[in-house]
Length: 267
Ligand SMILES: [Zn+2]
Image (cartoon, rainbow, N blue to C red; front, side, top):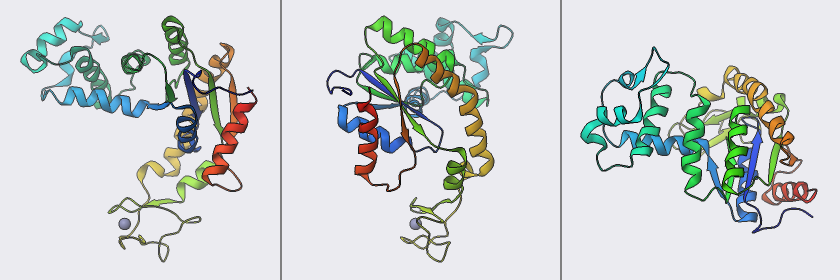
């Protein structure tokens, strides 16, 4: 049976960081005529809107530490004064709230992530998307399920990219990048020249700090603690889940496409 192009509202791609989500997202975008909606892009968009107004003061003035919440929106607008005049107020204030947490190094609460997501998702009428990086917690999943139900759209399926922790660690710590031209290498699968130099420009390649074993393991733990319950919740709410292998014997575009489409056929 499978999914029918044109009848799919939204798909979700989930999986551990480093599991290989992007090639599967590319397949879904191409096969179903959808767009990718990534949390990273949403945050960049709203932070950009806030940064564009040119506020250079202290971010702490917008937050009431005692009450543990932001000042009411009217007061935020008042504090920003002329800077926000004529701008998209909702977007700027969302950007302000996201920036406050990111800048203070605090965890961005689900309420803020949900608000950013809803605002962005609304632009497409709550459909036509491959969701990537959202929902990432059980509360976000609840919010999303309620949101699509209230807007009359749906979540058609979750594609879970399945990969063993140890395979992800091995693949990630072998990765090297050229700090000059950004070309990506892998010590085992696509080695740099003499094991250390970029084949394009000759610069010594580096291990990105995000690719350290400690960072990868902490992301894998976070997946276990938060995304696994999020996935269980969605499943319980009736969203079908199909598993696709993160590692393929032969990694070609066609092999990736076939593994994703075959899995969806089971629906
Ligand atoms: Zn280079």
